[in-house]
Image (tube, rainbow, N blue to C red; front, side, top):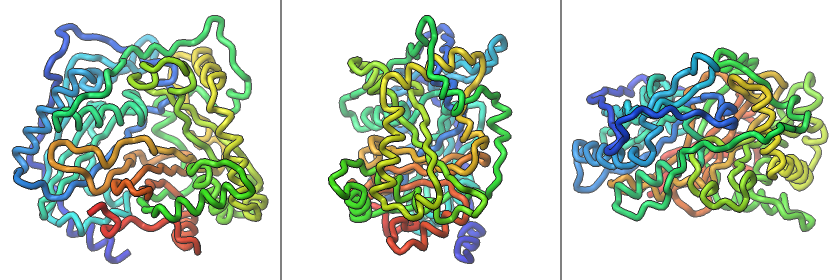
Length: 452
């Protein structure tokens, strides 16, 4: 802890430039993009993806910035809503995207320490160190920070109304392809054509999990526990070992199901006696479910296509159960949302509760102790070369200070060797339990785990 305090005290970020990058080609007429039903379920949370790069060869900072601006302007021609503004519709109180090419905010900064002295583990400290822009007027903000060694950090902060992880991954991959003069693989579809059925119908169980809310409700989520933001490394052997434990007795379980089972078991071990049960949730992407035969929707749709499903289990049963037993509970819970009927019902439920925003009751802090698991296994990381090499680390975090659940996001490391980087928002007891578990699955992120 003393080392962390020293690092923060000596760490300075000096801003040296700020600009707006607009789409290179855009319509002279302002276009208003109405959000889909599933967009209204996004919570408007700011989502930040950050990528660390070693010192670029044969390029100075000015050249890098100029090149990035050029690639970004071309990318925004296809992703034009990302250069717009998000405002409240005065009649419906729902957010809408004004596609007027206001531009993306790009900030430039320098730090006084080398990259290898940064505390990668403590995301709370990282977010307080002015490495992530927080101007709410821009739905997409980018900051490029150069370290004393010449290494770089690029952060991309998106308003969740713009889309989900799949959408942001397509944007970043397109930016990388344009920067490196490769063929662009995504032709973005901005129609937001997810619509409710006529007449609407839905399973009444959705009333138990979701609720209409306001932006004020989201900003003021009650938090009963202190939440710590941390970054972890999980090596490939640990990932494989967990899957082997989950697949005992011939069961077929995914890596994320095995990972969830292990997490849930550890979570149960730190629950106090006042909790007879505890809950776990999973974010599920509906791109393969809503229109299963529509390849354009699967590959190119930009927007939110997510649901959140939860399961509840007895604390003692989780403590005493095997990873295989718990993985079976996880598998069944996730299967409830990985189908067309669930998503069509959810779209109709939102339609019946409009106008306004919607959110999971658990995320709003209205359902007891819960931990949400999100998988970014298909999110690009190691391949994101923006013209000056491949990253040594890439992950996600958020600047929000209040959330009603613990949260864990897993994705492949930049090493592309089967190891994972896990970004987490957890209460202190769970942090201690994971870091002190005899299996040593969660390793606090350190420079030694960076892709060389």
